[in-house]
Length: 125
Image (cartoon, rainbow, N blue to C red; front, side, top):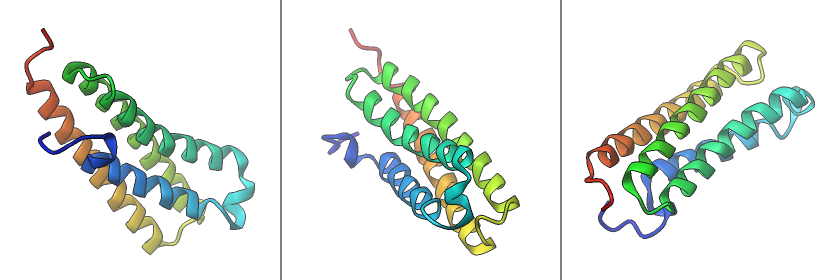
């Protein structure tokens, strides 16, 4: 993680943040806005992905951070499941869904790569 000085420098965090922004944008209007349970569920999962990565980063321990990456992957999986619900309910058209889905997959892959890297780091003495 050379050159990473704060959580905002992490590619995984940047992708999670972009996904969160996209989720908040599409849930801010139309029928999805009044589906309070769904709206709050997908927003919460998207926020959790960003927040959990940031929290793990500031633990200053690679193994502990890896555990937080694992939790982040879970939140991203939840976002992906909610995106499928959004498409089924026609809250997103195909192009919007495809964009959000691709972004969620990229965030999940980056988090997985970070997790793999952190698990290979020597334990804290």
